Amino acid sequence: MEIKENIFTNDEIVISIKDLNKSFGKNHVLRDFNLQLKRGESIAVIGKSGSGKSVLIKCIIGLIYPEKGSINVLGQEVTELDHKDLDRLRVKVAFLFQSNALYDSMTVRENLEFPLRRHWVSTTKQEVDELVMEALANVGLAHTIDMMPIELSGGMRKRIALARTLIMKPDIILYDEPTTGLDPITSREISNLMVDIQKKYNTSSIIISHDLSCIKITANKIVMLIEGKNYAEGTYNVLSTSNDVKVKNFYI
Amino acid sequence: MLSKPIIDFFNELGSISKFGFRFFREAFVPRYEFKEMIRQCYFVGYKSLPLVGLTAFIMGLVITIQSRPTLVEFGAEDWLPKMVSVSLIREITPVIAALICAGKIGSSMGAELGSMKVTEQIDAMEVSGTNPYKYLVVTRVVATTLMIPLLVLLGDAISLYGGYLGCNIKGDISWQLYWNQVFETLTFGDIIPAVLKTFFFGYAIGVIGCYKGYHSSKGTEGVGQSANSAVVISSIMIFVIDLVAVQIIDLLNLT
Image 1 (tube, chains in turn red, orange):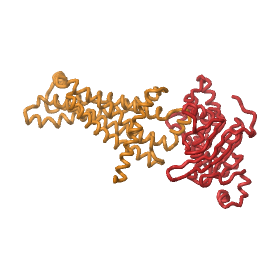
Image 2: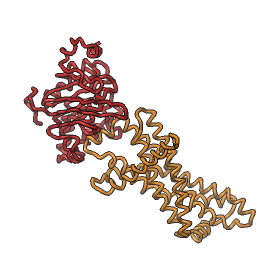
Image 3: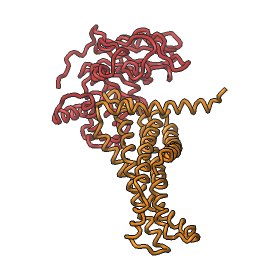
Image 4: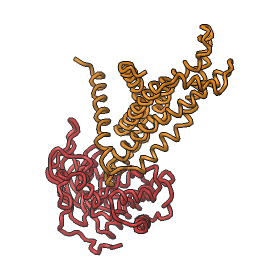
């Protein structure tokens, strides 16, 4: 397994979002939203529930199509890709779902093998086994390989979901509320795991979260999404000292 | 001016039709999900057989026992195997088996896909390079379309056996004579149209069950509603298809 040496951010833009607009009926969730993610960077997007944070990352992965605006991921315009090209792009962009989205009817091994087999990755049985074991070792759950998701605790399921996102060795990981519903200790473990993964594989990430302790550990930068726009941007420390009432509300 | 429930009804009908027609666009182009299709055939066919078989057996037995007094009144007791076999093969077994499957399979598809929808498993499939419609819907609709006619054929045989036992509870008819009378009466015109309509029953059960699950609203309540409405709509559709099929069979003079 190749470990990327460079763990620092550089100026290569891996995700560039310009003037993104998305509405559901009369509910205009994203209004001219802009964001740029550099290679190796971690950006946390915070905002109230229903403010369009999850919609934003689902637009990035092509699960939801915006009405207007541009989403450029690794040099490709997501809204213009056909199904095959979108699938190819999704090999490089992983998504950690809020509810983990582990397939209930499959074992942990089958859950991890699923993206490998479905993305037509030409690997032998031995290579698949090695990749599965490596992904599980990364999250410290190699012993659960033949267990069903229902047999695992919430924290373990989150780790397995994280292992599944890693199996394709993505360039970018999109985290949708990675610590929601977890106790503070498990939440911290998951946050540390996210940092370890980023260091090991030099991934770039967008993290949707309400959990400030997770954001403090994992994000280089915070974007505050209010009324569909990027209301404020900055590091954790810069925003925590802001005098703006709306920004301060998040830090109370 | 149409009221909202009527507009909603036609909107739903349109959405189900669109969802159902998509099956024909997706089913005949690669990638083919054979492994998942076989798995679904096993669940739909093999796992439903005991229930369909038991119901068919009881229907055969009960219809025979209940028909006997009327035929005795007219001195036509000898016609019991003939009358019962035609009723069972043409109408009772196909419709009862389809209704049982609508309850068992329709609800399980609605609940399974509904829970996959609310726990984002369908989205996860899509980002894993899988067309969820092909993987989840096409495989299930193929399974119900192929397996329900098979279940009905097996149900036919079991219900006729129930009819034989029913004839012998108060009467006395030999095994040989019973089957001779049954096969003297039955023609391909009775069996083929009755089996052909079950392909449509199976397609309707698969499409409606998958549609309700696939479009389940958020939350556990939504999953329950999907399962429930999948059964209700499938059952109604079975009667509608049956009504249309009977008219067509009658018009074409197939019986």
